[in-house]
Image (cartoon, rainbow, N blue to C red; front, side):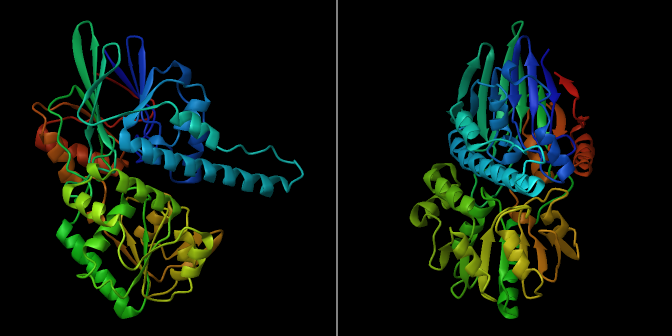
Length: 463
């Protein structure tokens, strides 16, 4: 009987990591960073709860760092087998991991200068991993396409289905045979929201013995697409009337491209001609180029727009250098600034907060999930001030949480996906805070008579 060991994303939305064992085979599903408070992120430096060199393969559902961000460390620790993921995901994960390695190295250098003052008094801080580790990791990736079955090991068959979450995201369908009987494990990764502006809608698998199901928004429903786009239009009009700027913290992959698409699509309707619009995110710029290269995996209407525009419109300015980014802060009104990081814990958005968040005319649009312990979560929860580089900054800006362009399915979307199964499967809810997955478990019990498991770290699920 196959066993799944829960090594991450249990009661949290980050650190996705699940180990499948059956007979003599060991397959790891995702190997993601833990993100949030410093005490939680310290887990990223702990030894893996398994021997990396004992793994036969890794299957990566998609490129976001909470699913991929520890892969270079896994390779450095001895794993040298294949890493399977989608073609587009392979290109996205390369730029994300390279950026993470650069940030890790810079942070380690900073800590060493602060701790030792250059005299070697403190033990040196090592980066979590380096660019060299990323290159070794990328050499192991075996890209696959959607909707094809691949025999990746004896008696192990893998199929990726489009999850509609971000470019290259996949629902992992893993069939294993033991004693002549086939068993199916499905890992949703992150399921997208149906009706996304950019990504195609997912299609439910028909059957499974066990589903590891994400539950990020299992306790709520998003606003409709029409309501959301009207809300953004109103925010833009309010900023214009108040002579302020609009700050949009955006994940480099997914949110950045969807925001650009919406701004381009509604350029006239939203009165954007008089605005200066900045894509102020080096990583977001690279990710946008990859989206343009893989436009065939986008929703047809969006793909046609991307082929025509390459995500450009008249007053969009691409600011790659620090000097260009700094210059934006001299603009007091009429600027829309898209910058990372998506949870506001790093990146250029924090510099824009420093200059803009104290102004009541500033509008901030939060368009993605904000994990506990992040600056973005503080803003969503209405914090009167935030801390930037050790100093408190009063939040006088207007903060808008726009859930309708989330890359995650809400409660109804998750239920609709599960309703596509011929027979209700065994379900374990992962990748969600406890409040969200407890609420979703109650819904699944009511609608499908499914007693969903809520596993904790170290738990083992058999199917």
